[in-house]
Amino acid sequence: MGRAAAWDMCRQPDVGEVTIADVDGKRAKEAAEFARCDCVRHVELNVKKRDRMLAAMKEADAVLGAVSYTVNLELSELAIEAGVHFNDMGGNNTVVAEQLKLDERAKAAGISIIPDTGLAPGMVCPLAMHGVRKMDEAESVRIRVGGLPQKPRPPLNYMLVFSVEGLINEYVEPCVAIQDGRIVENVEPLVDVEEIEFPPPFGKLEAFNTSGGTSTLPHTLLGLVRELDYKTIRYPGHADKMRTILELGLMDGTPVDAGGLMVPPRSVLESVIANNLPKGHDDVVLVRVTVEGKKDGKKARAVYEMIDYRDERTGLTAMMRGTALPASIICMMMARGETAPGATPQELAIDGDRFIEEILARGMPLEVRLEMG
Image (cartoon, rainbow, N blue to C red; front, side, top):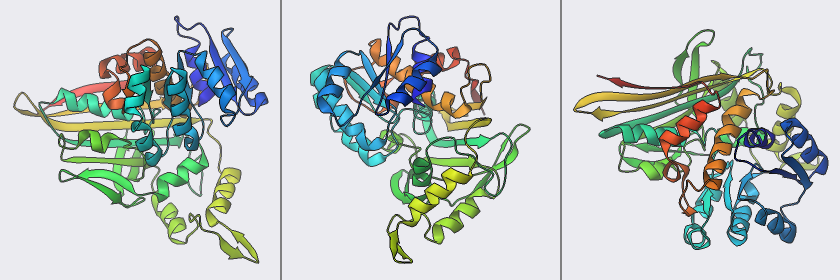
């Protein structure tokens, strides 16, 4: 995802230099080569080497974190000290809440901190907010997102399109929603399976509760809508299989005795999945954000829909495009001075129309429509 963001940044006409930093110098070099642009340089850099990290951040106008969510708070604090804008690809609601507590410090430093950017959480949040603002009175927000193989293969009809750690988190952590006008923070994952249909060749798929996709939206939209939920899209039958694995305890991080060795079942599961599932290559990303309400005294529905495939010309997978390009767009917005200082949820930090304009400019097939009646 980081190399895809760098690929996009260095193709913007007002960018002078893009630095790709990684704890593994070889990987940083490979990412720079992937970008195929003279303005890209690479460095070996460890987040834990604070002085070097601070010095590197001071050289930039804006920094995008495409690393583990476990260091995003630390990077946010360094960004404040360096006086540089910062956004990240998120992945953990608790970390995001701590980042947002840095609001006053970020304002004092004159910089923007925007966590949890990407796809979901990420792009879907500004789109949902855009839809709510189109209504005179919004009632519900339904977010459905999936990264899938174009050609599903058993047993799970799934392929790894992002980190296995993040995938399991979505399946085990409680989901946050708005139900009947109230925030509910313990919605069960892998349940409430519904049928959802997309144009051929996909047809009827399934969508079910997973965690993380709503990010800060429930708190932002509390009082503005009565219903908000997020579900992940998969080929039919996937949720039932993963629910079985969950109920067997194989997603549990607590070590168990395995022949004298104390082993966390989740670690074994992650290794097995990583070793046996196909990796993201010929993938597709499906997005449908639906906002229902009233406009001009009539029932209305704002729909944001996207079916995006791997780009053979650039080598960017659909998930790389869907995750990295929105994060890159927000990073560029910060660098251009289009965001106000502070630590702010993305749906409040950026202009929705400008965001959609940038999404479309990158060739992402986002369809936006307002349906009346």
